[in-house]
Amino acid sequence: MDTFLLRPPKTTRRDFLKIAGASLALLGLSQTLTPKVVKALESTSGKPAVIWLEGQDCAGCTESFLNSQEPLAVSLLLDTISLRYHETAMAASGYHSEEALEATIAEGGYILVIEGSIPLAEDGLYCTVGGKTFRDIVHDAAENAAAIIPVGSCAAYGGIPAAGPTDAVGYLFRGTKKHHYYDDVTGDTPVINLPTCPLHPERLVAVIVHYLTFGTVPPLDDFNRPLAFYGTLQHENCERRGHFEAGRFVTDWGDPDQQGWCLYLKGCRGPWSYQDCWKRLWNNRTSYCIASNAPCVGCSEPEFYETFSPLYERRFDVELPGIGRVNIDKVMATIAGVTAAGVGIDMLISRMKESGKES
Ligand code: SF4
Ligand code: SF4
Image 1 (cartoon, rainbow, N blue to C red):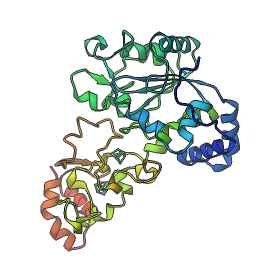
Image 2: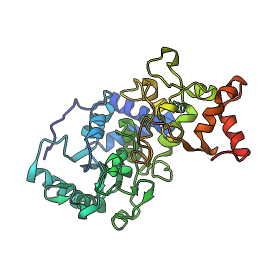
Image 3: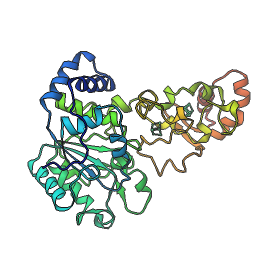
């Protein structure tokens, strides 16, 4: 049964080559593997099945994925694999769509993509689809899945809905802590979290390509994120880092002299945010938050949204990775003299730590 509205042009070998090249680069793997990836993509055309569930979400991850101008995202979904169920993209509705879902679950061996958080409060009644709680839909779909990919911050850790009253969780995590609700159906099934708000489409394509080619998932960190995409800290790679070091911070959005300065005092969470947005960029590699003069809000992290809120306000007591806890007000109080003396802020923080003066 063809349940889908969207039908792009058939994927060509040239498209496969682009998908292979981009995915290998994204995963940090050698381009010499390109023929192997292309062969895997061509031979798996039409398979394996993918179920894409949506719970407490805004469909932003779906939008992000389908709006990708590169042929790789949509072509991969609709021509290389068999997308059996996707509430936003499929034409079918009602009983037909639910039948497609049930048939695919009964078949087993599919990739399960989850978008949106899962409300556990009140027995899951805050989100129901077709008369069934999303909590239970995820439970049933996870049991026979070959791999589970929660996309976006909500499905990974609870995200924005976790700030509300529904006990919204990700598939494995409630914020930074594992909740174990799905342990009975997860078993050894790999779970690959792809947070950010919304999903970056290239990261999902690369994970699927890796799975189709090697039958495995790339190495993950403690929050089940692929290290290839989440192994670097924004702050350490930021194009504004020089201004941070020199103590030049944006305090007035309207001051042209502050253009390009560090956004820490405007609430940047880059010092806590592990991702590759700084080199991956967004919107078909056009730009990303900091390059667009907006602070990183840390949407790649399990602390997003509630622990990091209010967004766009600086934090006072901060735990800087590799440095320790510092009181940013103390740093700011002395920064003018320090920068005049040509000493970087990191050195100042280290000195405060060494001398035991930090809060
Ligand atoms: S605080 Fe933000 S804007 Fe400033 S250097 Fe770090 S990541 Fe870049
Ligand atoms: S730069 Fe920060 S806020 Fe922007 S998408 Fe990446 S992690 Fe999210």
